[in-house]
Length: 100
Image (cartoon, rainbow, N blue to C red):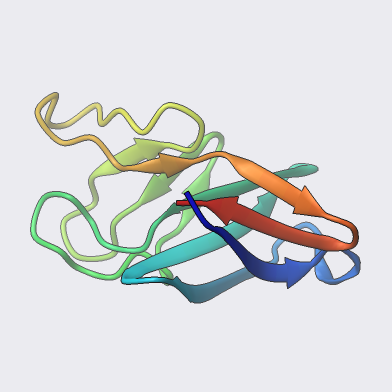
């Protein structure tokens, strides 16, 4: 596994979102209701980017088809076979990152 620095922790605020590359993976970093979430930036249904998706409660919605994915579990109400990859946050000093 390798550690990838994504953003500095002082940059995080409610509503923060950014797309970052970690190796070959394109990740979406979100800070919502005091929690930071790192998810795959592609909808598992058809690969559409999720960075412009709306967040309602604990769900991130795909802007293309409206599928809603739970931010901490990745499950989808509309299609049980679609699960959004969720990544565990890791820290290196003032950096938020992920180990892949």
